[in-house]
Length: 137
Image (cartoon, rainbow, N blue to C red; front, side, top):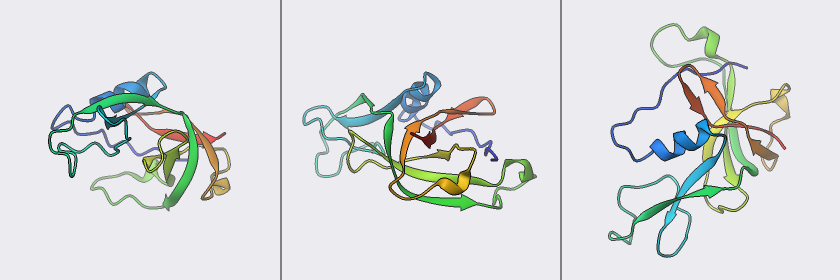
């Protein structure tokens, strides 16, 4: 399995708690502070509720694969041959219905990935940062 080494860009602090949680082996997502409804990917303004505030909450580290794709060739400029192939999954955490968290599929047998597969958070070191990874539960 390759690991793409593309550090996250922090134009704002909006996503820092997500990556800080991954560095501790935890999955943190945003929710509406008033209603508790999960909202992921965190918008700067909540649609339909422009005055709502977001709160970071720890989410379940287990979930199911919603969809996946295998990346065979990097489209980034430069030499990224050592980073491919890899499989990207969208995972819906057990306690955060509707949220789809992107991550790498981490398994000895990458061919075992399938929609509906039960997975567990397994953060992956990617250069100088940590990205979401998910392994079969």
